[in-house]
Image (cartoon, rainbow, N blue to C red; front, side, top):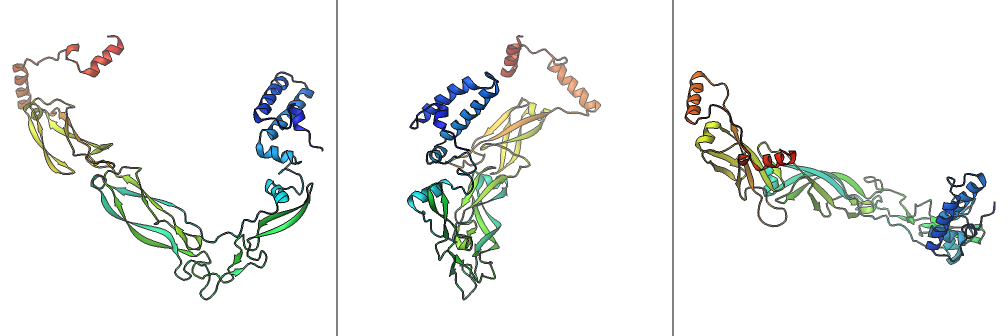
Length: 370
């Protein structure tokens, strides 16, 4: 079947710009869309217009079409077809790419390292064990058995690619392809190294020391340059990335570089005032609770949080006070509490007025229309 004239189908000149092609297609699509004109003849023309636009709106397909091919037919030119590179070979001769190198860089690797809060705060040196590829000690990366070397490929004669001649609408076309015998390397390994089987590297287990900087958090990645796997053929080593995972602490909760903890205080101690010995990351600290400390009160200890990863200084430690109401009172304790309630005239609960409410209570009432 002859290839249609896509320019004529869209009604544009052969030197039409992409914008002119787009405008022409949109105009025709609105006129010929099946929702507007459902008859079969109109639908067939709509398909032809769409096919023309698919070719002419794609720079590479349009160039193929202008050279005489139909990009919509398989890979451009039907049976025995040629790609765009083959067309360029036909005009300018085969483009030699040269043999591939057996030496390539290795792939980067990622491992996870779990640290505790103390290590996140102050930093630490941690040893990790990794299984990775290193240069083969038997062949030192060449991939050949001791006493042997690579030999030139007899099919491509060291070029790494072979050429073939095919006939097309352009006449005879000479194309280049990677050599099937050597895989494009231009050389063969007749006697591979028995240790690495010709890869030039072997896997081994080794121990590395990772310097964990102060201030890391879950998700922080540490890059160890050149500590990843060695590439094929003994190529350059890649990088190893260590992703930090911070383990939960039994006392402290971390938010950014600030730490939070909760101290449970008896009701009587909160009323009378007391001091609490708190074990922090910097040693034991004495926290003073003033008489009348209320539930939910927060005491901030400056500079006792986690060190900042970037920049100097540290976050803060926030101590939340949880006042515990006594339960399981005996008769003597009940009597004393009743006497205290009588003295303070607190026998009955009172409705708190808005002037004594906290900020959040007032905001809640405002939004509810009270």
